[in-house]
Length: 318
Image 1 (cartoon, helix red, strand yellow):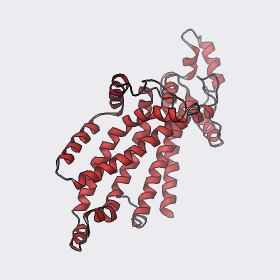
Image 2 (cartoon, rainbow, N blue to C red; image 1 turned 180 degrees about the horizontal axis):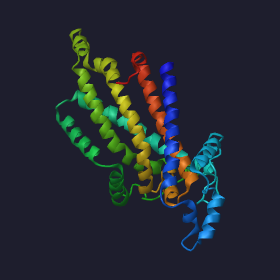
Image 3 (cartoon, rainbow, N blue to C red; image 1 turned 180 degrees about the vertical axis):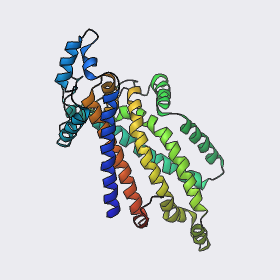
Image 4 (cartoon, rainbow, N blue to C red; image 1 turned 90 degrees about the vertical axis):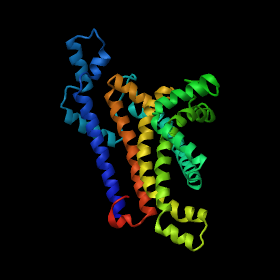
């Protein structure tokens, strides 16, 4: 219980630091929302009045703590760019899209990586193992946005399996919405699955040469039973740790993928907000995305603790 409480405490500290760094970073760079919204012909007097209306003339630390208190209360302010629309409404409208894309990608990553890793273990050194190694190396080398462009060219323009740039909102058609998410989910899945396969495959091979596996074989245990009952559990410990890092990569990579496939999620909203210096929207989105990533990593560490209770005694994750 102390281990879990400690991890939750670290998660809150991380979120606090993310909010501070995000607020300070966009406060010290050149330009501000008043200059962006005022245009090129705005006078210095008009700019001063606009900054005063937006509260940008006050001390940055005072503005931060006011924003933090309001954020905790559920009030993230109003967007400068979207006509005074509340930030909470904009985030709540786009966040389900990003979560759905990330969830679909993670499901595919888990299914593909575990299936392929077990397949290579049973055929170690064979033709199947060599082919998978080649595709794994290629998948690791290709970034997500490049993989997205390849999928658009091959399956969008050549085979016309989907319409590039088309997006169907989940409020209009849920099946159409899922169909639009499959290509970008594959663009995220392929590189991350390649990393996970490489990592999980090496972990399984390492466990297969352990003393307890040789003992189980000497007692007449079948290879498949030993693999599923003993090896996979121990091999999953470092794999779950890697999965926590992949979750962070999925959420950060989805920002670019949403642009490539014209997905109306928080990634596209964040890029628009950065370009227009929409501070309230940027801060809220950064904290929301950091919250999802931190929660996923904390959950991964708790899952590892459940798999191997010895971690509670040492407080370390393998």
